[in-house]
Length: 227
Image (tube, rainbow, N blue to C red):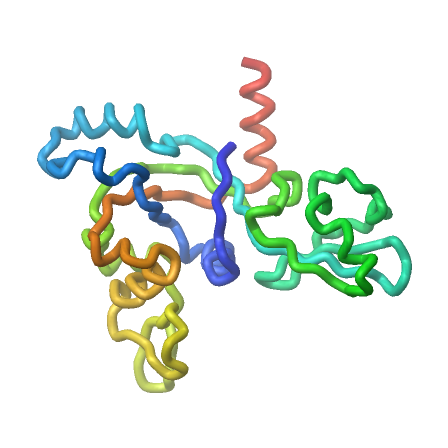
């Protein structure tokens, strides 16, 4: 099972069913064939099976930002998903254990008098995952090949000003700026994550995904173990 790092906005979009595509830059851009679009479908499929980071049918678990909060001066803590402040629904007294798979990098926060600590998504353990996806399609293309429909499937946020629908500016360089097109909004989000990539028109992996439940993940795991 592969990880899928999402920020808070994209976690919300995925949970609402609005994010069904995700793009990531292809590593080693100079080694990727410039004439990719001229390749036959059979050749593309063979290359995807060989080098793509995900394959159709793969399961992804979402890594998202979490927050640990201490209850008073006790050694108990509770954890929350920051995207929607949902409780992880566990209270454990293991704050003072130096070796834990989650708090190992944050073991001093309670000694500093802090009442809470943010756990970046990259450090969220797999066992805390609540969102899962199944890969239903994989392809490669230039980042600027994205369509308006694809940009919407990336989960970009819409803004309603009472008269018209606009699309969010993710660069944070203008308090009241928004876009009249989904692609422009996606471009701002892409530039915030991968500066310079849009201008270079990098090749990207495009994965189409569908949301699945933890029960479906566990069932698939059980079946795989039996096989």
